Length: 494
Image (cartoon, rainbow, N blue to C red; front, side, top):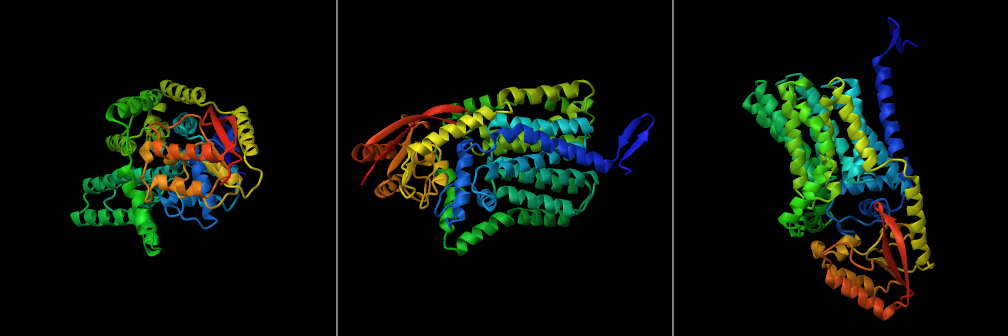
């Protein structure tokens, strides 16, 4: 069919067929790495929460107003759209696999601007393998918005190669991608700002007039903020501006963060995980990688912006590193093209991911499903009986089809001192209001998982249990790679 040509004794694959093979390799690698987790109902507490919110949006609930969180609307919109296909957890896990695959393809395309096909595909595979190391095996927010950032970076790199003094559709599309990323996670502002500033710098270096630079800056900011601004406008016109503003901005200011020493310790532990890839990054900035000065500047700036993005929310949970993986693997890609040494570094980094967060974990998923089924069986058989998940998997609400959830229903928001009263409603009052609805069963942990605990809400729940609940059962639940004990207090009455 003309797709394979021969030069000498070896076949040469044409460009279109090569692109298909590369894309298929990345997609299949991501599928192999993730498919045994498909159907796992307790893969990560955040995934569960986003999924439940997305499902409840189909019943008319509105984020921030009916169900509170501080994540931007775009993330819940993604889960809402997933809900059109299915109310089973495998739907979001398949969507996450597709986003991861697309991000891997974008990484390959970025790296190909600087290095060999082999090095580029190794960088894409490294991203896929490293996600699980940092809690990205499911549907965390960066799993989705990293794709938008990767597309933006690819477009800017390609535009930069033209040494143009004019922005074109690639710049404007990149800014639009940054705008979409901002609607999924606010911290994408750091990388988005860098991309915009880099464009302005290149315009200046290429001789653009001050007027053109100023107009470009204003247009880029307008395009970037447009999706987020439209969300705010929707809430304002709906009469819920304060709820939106409080969730997006005030809640992050009101939240208590760990002390400086604890933050530094968490950050150090998290960044140690990146050391294997760091060898490749160091080599990228040597002459052996063969990068032009402007490309090294872009990579360095993107890395710095990525670190700033992580530091903007200094809790340093392990999944907070996920956004940084994107610029990290791209930065290491040129080094992977160094003859002999580069592929070895890449394979060692991928192997590190395979050892730390192994693929092919069907037994893990089977055990998670079994434990979750045990939990569901221990709850009241009456589908109309209310259940309060004070500490445990909120996926319970989805499987029981329970509506009318508390405004705050994420367990950590209910039972951690650092999350006390950071929503537009009082945390203790939310718990009291839910207890006043006389839940027939309460799910909680024997001891608080998130410390320091909210002693007020714990006391209210324990008081209700002591007065109204007669049966108790303790089970073990596999969630987030470890088994932990939870208690089901049932046979409760008003």
